[in-house]
Length: 289
Image (tube, rainbow, N blue to C red; front, side):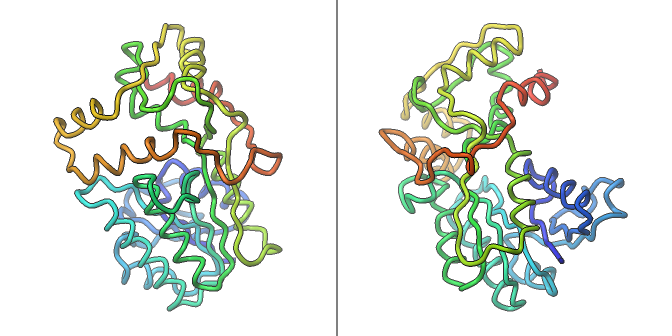
């Protein structure tokens, strides 16, 4: 089976690549920076230079591929929606022109809304486009990445955690390694067909207040959790020089998933994965501090 992995150096992709190699697969890594692939992997993978936002590069790189794990790259540009549209165009063209029969797409909780969830709307548009191709496609609706805490490492070092969300509202927290495991098993399982949605919710829903308690216990320091008002965060982002469209895309991911939002896929044995936030903090966040 010829499996292509986009963004192989990302939080999920680096784990997925290793899992496929250990399963006896020689994955094709689609990357803008071939030189960033670790030397230890080079004997076990194939590497193609392909920017996920470049349609022609992706089409050329995926000839002869049987399945793709696709990720819309995170955009920090002045027009995130346009970047998601370019990524969507790339994977759609690759599937059509190369007759790729199978895609596993890394989506997000909230994509089921289709509109009103900031940058997640771009993932929703990719889901819709893939659904229209008549291929076997699984959308991984992932919870909130534990690795997002690394974006607040300076605040956490100072004993503070900030969020736009209510402090007592539970939500799914998931380790990227668990997402990679679900992606790997889905790619390697040829028994499923048609359109599927697979939630990846981590082991338990956590409120931000509970997250602060876990951080404090594992890091040996008090971590206060503060809810920031939308307008205050908007002003802060704009003052930091972020383009307005990027600011709204980032804010919208939180604003669109509160006020009673419930994920379409309920927590179950199918959607629950094992890595706890406590374990992730101990293994990955603590060494950063």
